[in-house]
Image (cartoon, rainbow, N blue to C red; front, side, top):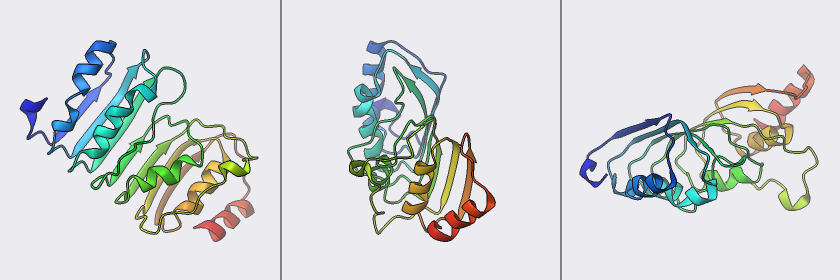
Length: 195
């Protein structure tokens, strides 16, 4: 990949491979210093756990000019995204598909992407309504800049409510919910209290 140091956009679609290819292919991702747009579309790495892919996620978060990320991976078992350990100084637009997450994941995600402006999340999480105290939702970082939020396949009212609490400066919101029943009064209460 080092020969493509001027590459600005990269899309990998329907990518699946063996373990050896993954190690070599992704090992030089950090050398794409001018990459601004990175898309992984319908990528399937069933032989890997997402935790085994954390180094790649960290490489992505360290790319100095990356502003757009589209993440649609499927790994072994249910988790399809792992929290980065590095701060991205450039990422502004992210899409994370099929993210089986809990409400306590979001503050960490947003802390690692302080310049994030638009966030698209597709979640299959069925997080319980009774959250233990140890998983109570954390307050938002003061510098959060997300103004657009798109939530698809939301199945958890606590997850949705937690995101609203975390992002009170949202100016554009799209939500598609499944298996959650809310009447007009409940929606009004959520909007008045959290947005």
